[in-house]
Image (cartoon, rainbow over all chains, first blue to last red; front, side, top):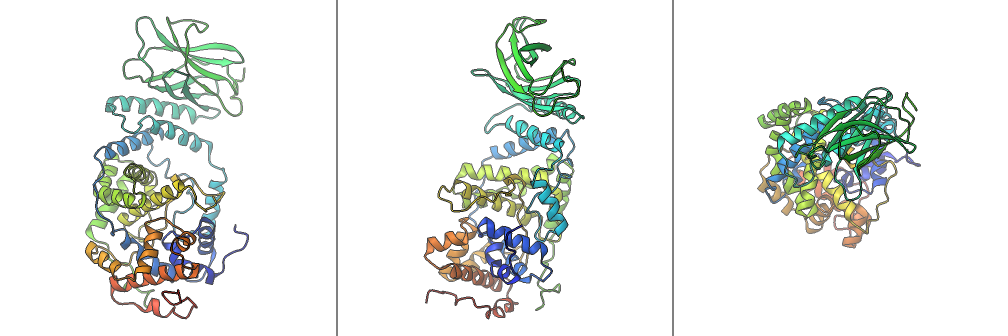
Length: 279
Length: 216
């Protein structure tokens, strides 16, 4: 889609810089477009590019810190959970740009479509959830595997709920001075599925209460307790909701309140078009 | 040119290539153990490459994490026959590391392409490898055999993450000279490392490129 397509000669002329990744983005895109559409041979690219992997060996070997393995594996585990345990979910998403060296014109169109936002919304949700889930294992955070798996399962439950027709995903962030973050899926009938982490443990008769707030009217969704691992996985009963409704968590002194008595711990706002059961 | 035949092209897959492909197949199936295996095979190379480019240990760690997650999510996009799993993986590391240094360079003259995909979605080109399983010393030796200006241009481009324009600004050489130094340097490496088939360089001499040094 460059204004002026690059000629074959021009592309060949830039081959060496292209295979080294040393072109400015506009030039690189023009060469890529040329390679995708030109029917002539591009042996120069193969000749020069073929030697580039050898350059990778020209480094002084340095061992990475041992903790890096745990970080990567934790992030991959969270990513797997965010895809509902379906490893191929991401693999079947539309490919992005830069995959292969000579994409066909049809492939390029698919990639353009992917870039310009025709991504299936479930994929977008999966991406959001993956970001949240990966964030759950911040750098240097040492968590027990058990805790990780509990949150994995909680996130997977939210993903399943969010993938249903008419459902919406909500990110919950902690209120000022509070802890507790996570995500929720609001089903078409207003049922809310929550996955939370970092919540301080409840004690005595304390409970967390999840609310949906439409206008200024809070409706209680569910009461639940949290132990020292700070993880909550909760599914509420259905409740009236609409676009822009707020999902909030409060820490209540007791269960069964019909209006919040405690302080708000974490909140998020429902996006997009109203779900089926608009109130 | 014998490039179209199977002679010099398409180095034979080694047993370790086959093993890597088997591991990658398991990664495609979502096997976390397989990802860990792949990490353990290539963590040292991956980290070393990221560190050389970023020159910052913590950024290098982020790059390696980012790259392995990219591999985790995109294992099915590895194209067999276009190079080894090792090269594919390490090229992703290289690509992410260059992205990282370009992003942090405050005076970067690079305009953002509006359709630039987010870094997490970009996979680099992988070219058909013409050399494989070479001794590291052999490769270091080949680099040392380049002229100083060729080596400098290739290193600024490949390890410095600089663009042609930035290399020109840094070295004071005209754009065309940068282009020819990089090209002739790569061809010289090819000649040194695979011995025969120097023809590719010679029969292109008439394309109006400046002489190697280009400063005259």
